[in-house]
Length: 417
Ligand code: UD1
Image 1 (cartoon, rainbow, N blue to C red):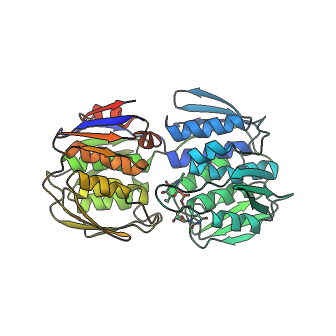
Image 2 (image 1 turned 30 degrees about the horizontal axis):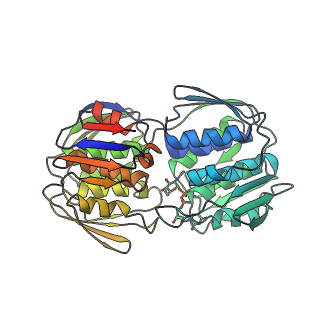
Image 3 (image 1 turned 120 degrees about the vertical axis):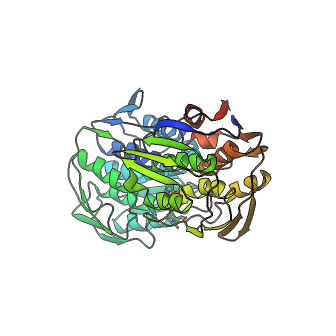
């Protein structure tokens, strides 16, 4: 597995374009199955998870052409209903194919997605909602068998606003009989993007981003061409890179309205932010302020996907900060690695208490998950000496080329495959 080698101490400067959102493009790619025509999708990030999803689509019978960051997907022959097990294991979010294959064929067989390094990730809410839409579900020998002669619209109230469950319901209900209403849905910008993509193919969905989503069942979808929204987590990661190195950088292709909770924490840290069009300029102080409490929450609260990168920055603040993780119970694997770099972090259940130190020092650390891996790269930018981040494959799942991007901003970082 590859590694990043980072020599800390450089200031960052300059401008960088943020790529399309992983968590928007994955459900959109899954949704192309519903359309037995052609979907042209622009600004698809060139990342491992997108490659995995494309491989799955091809195994299901789609023909996929790639032209730089544009994917052209012909789903007319997507006849398969069984999702290959080894690929589901590679990418847990392939569970969103449940809704789209079911929506198209009234049948799907998918292996149980199993454990995950950031905590237990059950799919009970997905299955409960699908049952409510008239889907017969049997779970045996690690596989989920779903069948429905017709998806029947109903009112579904989610016990928790799960992103994946909301997406699966939307996908399954597109061709449903009558209306499906989702109360307490996830409100993430990626849900709005999925609604917009589905509507661009002829679906009839409204309310994404609010407390109630209404899907009017339709009979047919058409070819479409669509641009994916910018990745708010990649943008947040690079803003944190500026914060930890006391730098001034500008990001382009960002949607500030998707990032308020992260931007407000950056301001509490003492960073100055200026906005113009789809650009954000950040000027960070030499040493950032601590932050009283950061609670990860569902959108529009502080995203769990920014928790690790923010923790890395707080390790070198001028005081004590507290983070509480409310979405994934064991999403603190990066903390052990940051401690190996000299950070002062105490973990008590869901809470992390981070006492700022003068500086971290470079050493060999291991990326254990995607955002945790990114946090170690950020720590390496600041640390004295050389930091080697092993198992870079986790980071490649969600960043097109973090070494290229940070080098472009002046960091000393190299990727070895
Ligand atoms: C999505 C994102 C992921 C992000 C997460 C939370 C994608 C591809 N991934 O993941 O990057 O970290 O949202 O913002 O978009 N839960 C249940 N039962 C269920 C479903 C979820 O208990 O049936 C729980 C999970 O264990 C977790 C919480 O709900 O504690 C959030 O999960 P969910 O919103 O479903 O996240 P994902 O869609 O898996």
